[in-house]
Image (tube, rainbow, N blue to C red; front, top):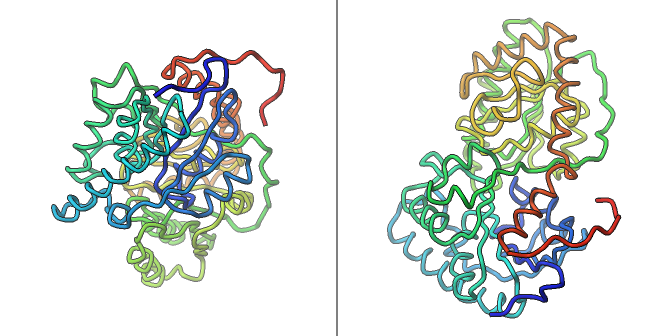
Length: 399
């Protein structure tokens, strides 16, 4: 298969299996339309909000529906029969995508989700196109069942021409044989000025992320209840996010926990909201809580909170431990410990000056994650893997 014109833009086909706006998809929405010197087509396995927003941003999008047997296979699926059916469906889908790749003639295929890594490896191999896997999850047993773990290790170790990990923590879990082909690049944050902070007489906490056991919203609730008991303050907690991937049972249990701990009257649960609505919530937040139970691969919301000028308390593992410098631009607490989380909350509410100092330093840290700081590194890595030169400077500033 011949690639695009050597003198023209680098042609990318980006594959993702979902169109719902979770972390990896929000990153794709920020990056794909702004790549300079690239002709990008995003191929999604379902229609949805991501497709609509990419098109509105000027990106080319195609929908190639994925068989439901494959779409419904979870990363923690252990049933052999289900895995076999899903695997065969992935294989068939990869064969279908080969025809799409032959028509689009890309220089590189970039996969953006776990399922896309698997079927994308098939399609890229059949079409003889180099594969770059953008890895948004740590490759550990905390995230994947053994069959998925082994398959992904094989793809990353033997098939990918390049790997983009969203943090050094994620990169450390990838196969050692792929180390020379791996780069750790953070997810960028929008550089637009945040919304003005809305003052309040009540201390306002927030936790932002999809409703899921590993995201630990119940830890935030327990810490908030303990903080209220120890300080005698009322305060408010806002839980932003919805159960996007069949985790409604955990969401229902979270509501019951609010009643059990007697804090239902002080907690707002928004459900799933669009990214722009998150900015509105952060404008009315004094302290952002990051509560993941297992090491977070990156922690995009941590950077967003810093950028918004909100004091951040984050778990001391994974990506957030790379972003936050404890006591300088945020506070870290032992992952999964609601007692220590409550102590950090108490420390910040007892000292408005500390809160303001950490928030101001956090804004400075967030500049390192702005699109102009991060995107050139994406572009350089993709060109290096694709063997394409950088385009001549155009003098046009990034949007």
